[in-house]
Length: 178
Image 1 (cartoon, rainbow, N blue to C red):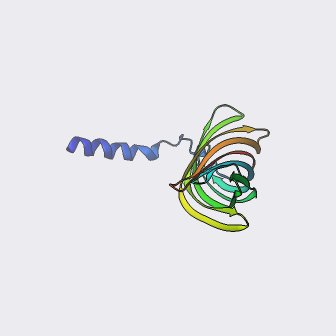
Image 2 (tube, one colour; image 1 turned 90 degrees about the vertical axis):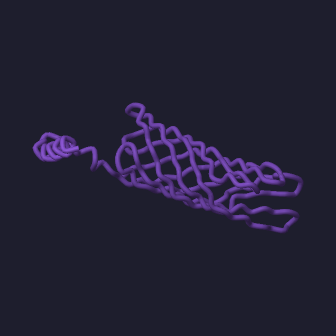
Image 3 (tube, rainbow, N blue to C red; image 1 turned 60 degrees about the vertical axis):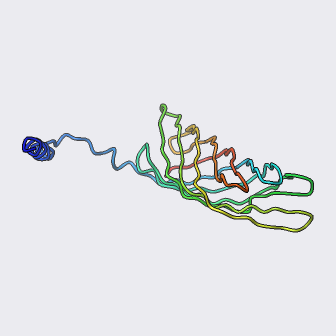
């Protein structure tokens, strides 16, 4: 036990003597904004629908690998799930932790995990009901850099996986890093 304490103490004392360490990777953060067009898959008790939504996103990339992102979206177009039953994404917002894996100078793979609060609107013969809930969300994407600051993405996102409805989608987007 005493030997472990001595080794740990010597290691900690030796750290400040390493003046040549490169800590520049720690301070590589940047803010970004963007937008994505979503083609959704909504599976409900009434049938399946494919509404279209649009969201804006913004976040902070702490370093090349880890970031945090927020999204706010609105539905653009509804879809018919069954006879006279139309489903539309009313609105949604979420907060996600992002992990990025650079695959070269202009290609990045990324994953998101977080929480989404989503409201769906269901119209049946001119009667409208809105359903809303929050759930754990996750996604995977591929980002291609057009310039050092501008990128385009294709992403799969699973927003909700509840008993009464399951909401997922493909996103096509653009992002600008400051």
